[in-house]
Image (cartoon, rainbow, N blue to C red; front, top):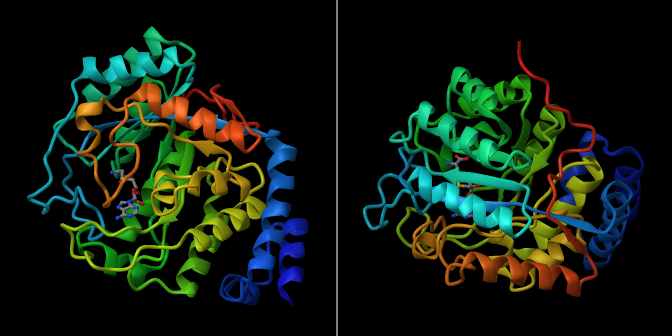
Length: 354
Ligand code: SAH
């Protein structure tokens, strides 16, 4: 197949013959990329119109028991200034987001065991009690199934847990031996089975990553069928073993967003902060490549500069109001309307567990 045939095939069928994924990625030209983005926008508009969903993200703790080699808040980074927010602080951020019209909050943190399951459930159910039409997304890492069930019963509807890499060899080069791909995948299938809308995804252009690894990621996603897919370029952090490594490119990230849109027409795909960090117009370009979600930051200004997964992270000097105003302006300028509503995966309904 030539470049255009591959994209046509993806557009029409949502998949490719196995041997065509690697050349699709490797041989991408500027023209083919533009062609892909046009097709991706067709799928995006069919399913969502010219709309971008907003999710307010509250980064409530940067304590972490994990030691991912790429991440600035890894346990062994002694230079990270650690913080965690109280329940009242988290609720006040959520209320502020509610005031902006947001009907989704994402509660994200490192794996901070000082928050017990009871505390997480209390925070989730308090948000739901005070703002009944607010959707709560959790992104707090690997837990056992029973914990995921409790959060769901407390009212959480979505869970973000990137698989980071579906290739066992690469996964092992990015994480200490105690953190296994097997457990990460177990978590994702548990979350699916419980009834969450599940978000997976990978970083692009990490050290050691090859095209075959990306192909494995696409095939894994095809099996999992997540409702949300978050991808972004790897960006080095100065206090990690990957300091001095090269950051990922805007081009590959945009291309992969386009590919994901054709493979998963109804998925919620963010134009991520990491993409906005490697390129000043990254988030706009991400939407024009097929993305349909943006996550303005709702964290209190005093802690923003501390949730540093990588160097140079944008939006750390602004407050929540400026951040959402900026995003709205950026989307308007490219002709998209922001939709602060729930923005569920089309057709998803919450099924209560018995
Ligand atoms: N503890 C939660 C949240 C992790 S931080 C969890 O395990 O899900 C959210 C995401 O940031 C990670 O999943 C990872 O893909 C991304 N990330 C971490 N370090 C990064 C880096 N150096 N460059 C780019 N993205 C990074």
